[in-house]
Image 1 (cartoon, rainbow, N blue to C red):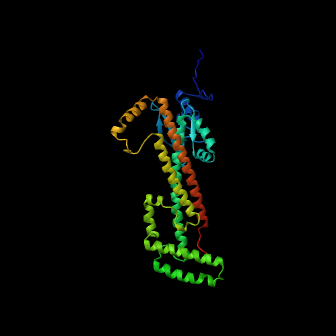
Image 2: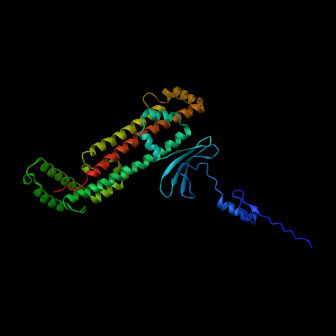
Image 3: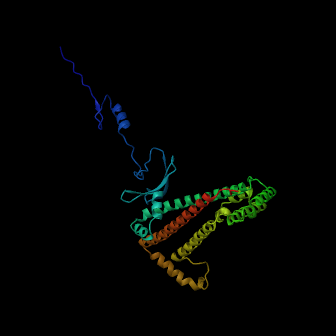
Length: 343
């Protein structure tokens, strides 16, 4: 009798060698156990990995072929964000909040050296990161000042045993009672007693004026709803001795921004409209000459000018970030001193 020979065909996984009965089974096994999805060229492998759909990306810049070269990524779960730059050689450079903090601790010369070694594309990515952090911290300062004003007002009312909805009559009655109890003559006449009485009186005057002028609880809400008005105003007089210092710092930042804008105008050659003696007839030849020079500039020269303008912008943002940091420290210090006056 003839022996029947059966041929059993098995399919082997190329990665682990597992034997499967069919090609489809082998494929499913490989996809499940061994396949790793291809990463985007802008995927950051240094702690900012894209776990599925957890990272949201915002396109900031593309190259001449339409390929993304600068992207802002945000972790949907934590809210952390960073800027990713794809270099021309395929490598990546990531800028995050940690980089900004490090820059703020470096000296001017150290930053100059670092900037000088940075390619233009990376420097544009760094500028984007600084812009994001500047907006973020400006909003934080604004909100903390609002919170301080609200807490300061609440504490001032608490000094007189009143709620924020009290009217002038209630405040006057509460002040008279407290003034009799805290008068220096009834408390030994010491310098400390005089200081405590004067501090209480100042709080009374501030609250009374706020209620009369409508800048109490309701008026303050209307004022802070106008972002521009609230942002331009410094801390209230009740902020403490450092409040004036905070306001001076803020004004200094505004002056510096104006000075920086003037410097930028001087660098790019812009002039006020219709300057004296530079009308169409007087400046016609010089205008044509300058247009001719602009037309003969090489791309390298144009890129160099753009880089110079961007560096000026980065230095300005760094100075503004330092100002905001100082103001935040002042506000937090004032929070620490905020408490109802103890009788």
